[in-house]
Image 1 (cartoon, helix red, strand yellow):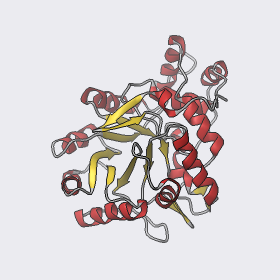
Image 2 (image 1 turned 120 degrees about the horizontal axis):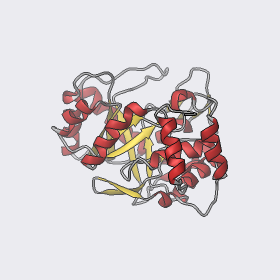
Image 3 (image 1 turned 90 degrees about the vertical axis):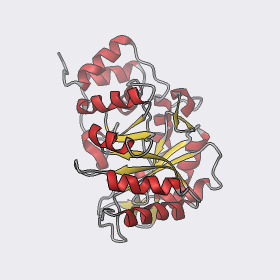
Image 4 (image 1 turned 30 degrees about the horizontal axis):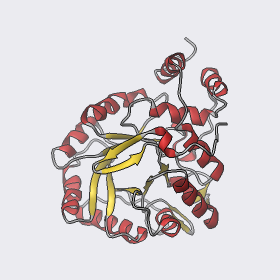
Length: 304
């Protein structure tokens, strides 16, 4: 497994979210609060000191883009509050991206924000938990193909009021992205994407054409989603991993960064060794032959 401590997040290159420059290798906080599947009823809280150590080491490794949300919590642990405890006062170059739309009550039950007032409450809750006076980037997480104009417009008003610096969208269709861009600038799109998710290629290309960051989630987990990795890997992908002395997870992560200079990575973990390996993946470089092979896997042409 490639884990050189000499590799930092800057080895993956940089991109701009509006007027904010971030290293393309970032960190996702979803897995920070528990052991086991995120949001699962049978998860146990993570060790507080270890989680704080992971966050601090991420910054030491050059990570300056952290993705989080107020609904990232488990019994006894909140991702936002761990970030606050670990990193405040925040480094000047640190960009914290959060998302609103989904919400969870104190029991963990899901409740979506369906009105501008509820959405504002979620924005204010993120600000309180993070200990800030505004949020760097807020993504509106959507569900289904319905219009997002009212809710995205509400976020645009909060941006004008100074509570939000930049706006993004998550789990969207090209049509919803166009709807949002007609209201206010969009600096990033967060959608599920990785090897084998070729249905996301069109939106990825569209973001590149429009200068919008494309930020895949579940790039490593794939169909495992909140539960994480676990599916057997193909012989072809394993061969590429062996050639680089890397893990299959590192290959999947590094591959997403080859899809365009506008693609950012936000792998999440509560394990310090996995953190180092994830950051190291940003320095992997594939041969043309390897890229062709991985493209075939992505398009479902395994073994052809």
